[in-house]
Every structure is written in structure tokens, then in C-alpha cells.
Length: 198
Image 1 (cartoon, one colour):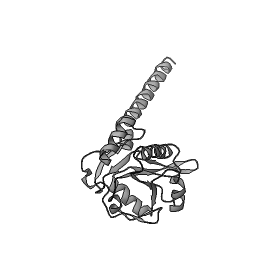
Image 2 (cartoon, helix red, strand yellow):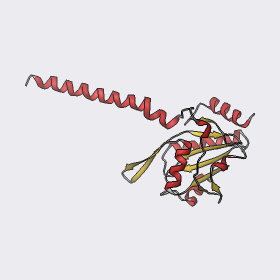
Image 3 (cartoon, helix red, strand yellow):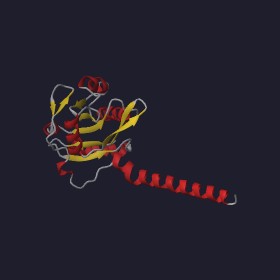
Image 4 (spheres, helix red, strand yellow):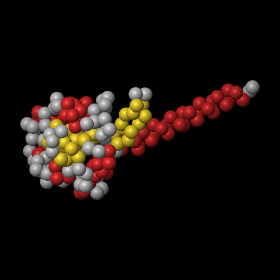
């Protein structure tokens, strides 16, 4: 049929349009959501009525952010790349600032991440405390910190999509900025110097 080649060309063009739309959605909506945070309304960031359990045996609440500068990262122990990479970067930050930074690794996968599992997972990086709790309390915390987390089906059960940024808080527990995933080292250094007042 003479229309067959035309039909194939139309289908190919529509497929390219679909791919372009998906790419546009990734670069304009999905990817920024994972690595950025709107500055609007950050005064209350980290504040809420969540009550979680830290791997050092303490309770993690909004008051845990007070006392000394802190960094908070949301991840999970089954994470294949973002979380171990970020923990490796945190190790470098700790060396650079002489261990002056408290770091909290809050799970977005409380069903699998017990306090014991988290403690082992973060143990190779100095100054990092794991944080877990019930799914309801974790949900409260993700809302309080305005991070994104979503369960995604996978061949071996499920995985988690989640924000890939590290949130910074000063000694008064006030939001002080963020470090993006694989952030430029110069920008990371500047953010840490600002946070620590050095």
C-alpha cells in the first residue's frame, strides 16, 4: 500500500515527539525536584511534630537540629548510587571541616531500614547518625523537610525515588542552604564555610 511508508513516518515522528516530551519533563520537572528546593518558605524547614529514632539511641525531633551545625540527608540502605556517593562526599566534608558538622541520614524506607541496619550502613563515615521510625513519622519528617520520596516497583520488590540534596542547618536549627548531589567542590566548600562561620 502506498500509505504504509507514510504511516511509518508518522508513527516515528509521534514517537520522537513523545521522547522529546519525556526529556523535557525530566529536565524541567523531575530532575530539579530531586536536587533543588524552593527558597520560598524555608524559615520553617525541618520543623514539625515528627519523632524518630536515631542510631545513637536518642530521639530525633526538630530540636535535634539545635546545638551545632547540622546536615540532613534523606536516603535508604538499598540505594544503588546516590546514597553511597553522598556518604562518601560527606566523609570528605568531615575531613575538611575537622568533624565540626553533625550529619543525619534519615531513611525514606522505614519498612526495611531498622536502626541496627542504618547504624551499620553509616558506620564507615565519621559523624553520621542514622535516623528511622514508623512510616507515619517518616512521612511527617519528609513533609517537614520538604523532600520528595516515593516507592517504585522493581524486579526484586521495590526501590525508592528520593531527593538527592543535603540540607544544612545552623546551630540554632535554622535552614542555611543545601548541597546538591555531586555539587561542584568549590560551591560545597563555600556552603560549608558559610554554615560554620569560617
